[in-house]
Each structure stands twice: as C-alpha cells, then as structure tokens.
Length: 98
Image (tube, rainbow, N blue to C red; front, top):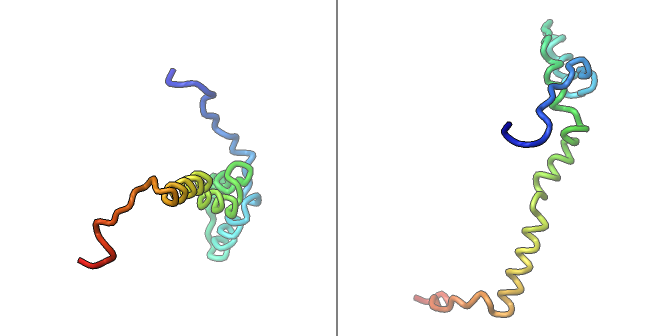
C-alpha cells in the first residue's frame, strides 16, 4: 500500500545514550550547573549519530559540493560553446555607447 520498500522502523530507545553525543553531554552539564535536568535529552541523541548523519564537517562538505560536478560540466560546455561561437553575439548594444 503506497509504495515499495520497508516500512519505517522506530529505533530502540535503549541503544541511545547521552554520553555518545558530546554536544548533548555539554548541554546536560550546563543544565546540571543550574540545578536542572532534562529527562528527555536522550531522545535527541539520534540526531548526533555520525553513522547515520555523518560528521558536521562531512555534512558541510556534502552541502557545499552537492551538484558540483554537474555545475563544472555545464560551465565547461558553456565556455566551449561561447568560444566556438554557438552562443551568438549580442552586439546590438554596441560597446557601451548609446
């Protein structure tokens, strides 16, 4: 019903520990200094799972370079087409004189 593939599986909450996410350890420690505790902090650990979501540097690299090979190929095709005269000249504007 509605497409192929496996249905979404809810991960077992017991496999996530705040200690596995240094960012959340910092949050937990900052809260503890103020006498506070977040019993649901463990529910955020999956967002920091590097096996699933890569490291922050890998995510940034992927974000900035996604599609780079296609853009580079299009740039080369455009430059070649311009050099061999396929793009046509737009000389009706002249050399800047009106």
